[in-house]
Length: 223
Image: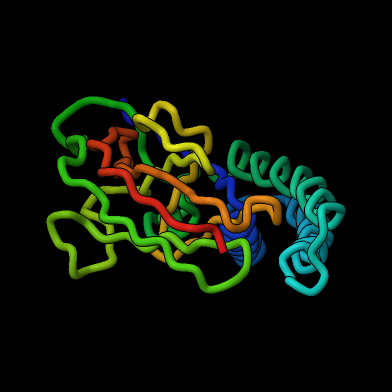
């Protein structure tokens, strides 16, 4: 039987966008979805602190190792608050419409029966664009429709695995993993990684948790 699941992103910029989107949706629909106001208010406090520290760490004129460490520390209570919201109020909540579940990045995994989508058979085509210091944006297309920057039907996200500096022989040798749910999402790197080469592979993962084949390797210089 299929069940609902979710995933918390890992890259700083994606985390920032994700927590803001989820918290705003929960605040606007707290009564309808049965979320206690205290739970929403508590995570808003942590979010305000995180966004303040994020702004310092991601500004080229103020970023520093200490600022990066402060941003990472402030993310922890936000992440814990998000997990609490998902596990206790959002997952398997029949009062949330299918459209809102899509916006909340909730998808189905596992299960059997004829309604379960098969594993993807195509591969992502990845371009990494450098638009700011220490950040690469992941722009994807599908091998079956390279002119469009959209996921195939039933795909939940593009799984990207990568490694900095050392050339991996296969995806299994990549040490970092990111779930990219929208084209042009960003991966943020530390100041020490600037000028080094990022090597990576990507594959589609559908809403049932089934994975497609890996793409060929891509690479880019971290700006």
